[in-house]
Image 1 (tube, rainbow, N blue to C red):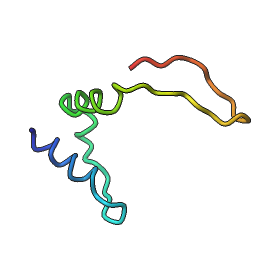
Image 2: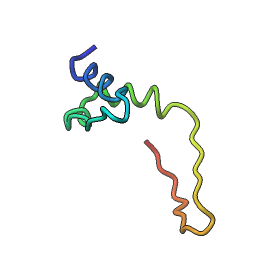
Image 3: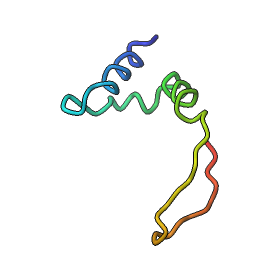
Image 4: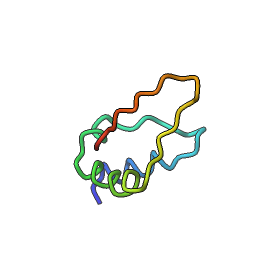
Length: 62
């Protein structure tokens, strides 16, 4: 596991009172992208919105 990915996991699992922003490089790292794609975005997602809010029903593909 890369040093950046380990840092990401440590920061992301911190309690709210110890939370910090992630390093900018996390958003550009292919290894982080792949891990998020597998763990977060691989499951089914359901689009919801409040009845009174305008909804954009355009499909988004990742």
